[in-house]
Amino acid sequence: MNLVHKAGNIHKNADGLSRWKLANTPDNPAYVPLEAEPQIPIEGINITDIKIKFFEEVRESYKKDKNFHILTSLLDEDCKDTSLVNSLDEVWNNSYSEGRFHSFDGIIYHRTKHSCDKTLEKVKNCAWWPSWRKETIEYFHTCDRCQKANTSTGKKFGLMIHIKEPKSPWEVVHMDWVTALPQTGDRSYNACLVIVERYSKNPIFLPCNKDDTAMDTALLLWSRVVSHTRILKNIISDRDPKFTSALQTNPHRLFGTKL
Image 1 (cartoon, rainbow, N blue to C red):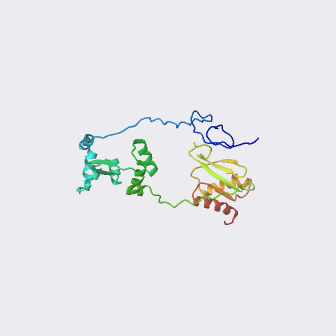
Image 2: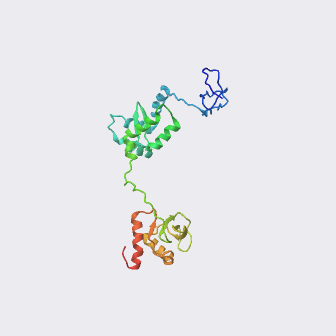
Image 3: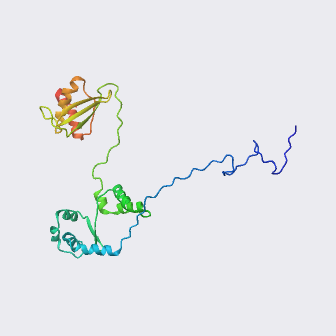
């Protein structure tokens, strides 16, 4: 048998040599319906258009309120009578002393001390306009009051340190205090010292007082834990470095040694 190619468009049956891409239409046997894009329903659009009359009524209402009337005078650039501040109510006086109030076109506005994330959240819940997020962030970073009120003044946190898994019991323990408990016992305990041994995950609950010092905690560890186990190599807690240092050195004083 000899196979001879015949040019033309008569032979249209699909075979392994001559194939072409068919359009993904309903008349195609291999048609795959496209997934419809999910429709997101719009629950509502609220467009607020405040008329000029509203602002005029606000300005007129200032004359009827003592605090607003005093603030209007204090926020005036030509005001020289600073003794008017003492005439304000305590809450208003505190906000004015902190520089919370400012006046624009006869309307008094109250500044807040929210962080950037909280400011975005408040704007998101009450308003929307094109590029609102970008403009809000730019306003926050250019606001002198926001930068002073929301700047961290403490030391930067250090890097996290990986805690090696202990190879034997009572090498590493975790300590935490549960406070604000009702007073119980002869010594009116109002807190609980929770100790978790990292190797076996065995917890120990010791009654104590929330005002216990590092020395009191060291004596409690010695009498209730160390005396039945051994000297602890690592103690992990969320207390400050001074407390942790005293907690480590005080047990050695009991032995007459220094750390």
